Length: 315
Ligand code: CP
Ligand code: NVA
Image 1: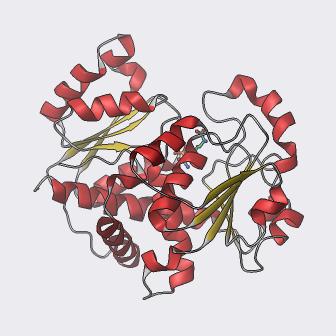
Image 2: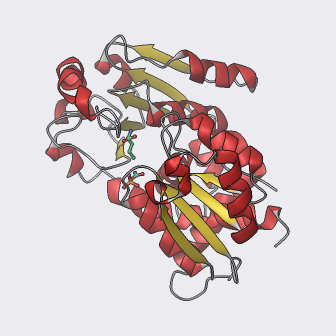
């Protein structure tokens, strides 16, 4: 049985399988969906807001023949102090898989350790692997063309990540870059650079990644194939928003900054966006902005991830 808590939980050949299946699901949407989750119920435990993750998982599980069961963390006994381990043990007696969005990544690891069914990370403060798989697929679709090798299309490409380079999206892109064979250059203010935890994650997995941090946004975007940004105040950081905006202002992805990347560079953002803060509206509207393809591909890629996890359970 497999869990998907971080990008590197799938082997390189499974990544290829996920991308090919996602391409197939996207092409055949509405015509054919193998009911690999037929008769299954998947619990979705959410401790934070969500539009894309919740809806794409609910729709995706339905399209694979399964039944999604949305659970607000606060409505569960978990919210009143029942342990994560007991929650995992009990849910495992009822459901065939669990998707969880919460704050502390360690909670997701504890849930998975005590669970008898696959657990999928729907975002923690540390990582957002479903997003990065969908993002990488979205860029690869553009670069590989309709029949090209999606995994090979990513190798050697450079991504520039701007703004808050210390939180889930930046961490996930660092780990993702190590898996995809991409180079990553991150630019943000001091105090918001990639932290010890992601470096330790790379070290513990014996991974090398061509990754650099700079305070100069122009240096980061030079030669980049993708310019990526995320909100400056993530969920749970709302009270720090004003201070963060003041520090991160030099890292707004303006039309001028985007123009300093490669002429064919793509603009990407996990969404939701705050136009006028981390990115100018003109960049969101640029023909090379692929933000809504990224959002759509959450559905196709997550259906592929669920199919691979379901196969790993032998169901
Ligand atoms: N990108 C993303 O995960 O969006 P939601 O917070 O809407 O799920
Ligand atoms: N960094 C953002 C990502 C949202 C998808 C957050 O955690 O709020």
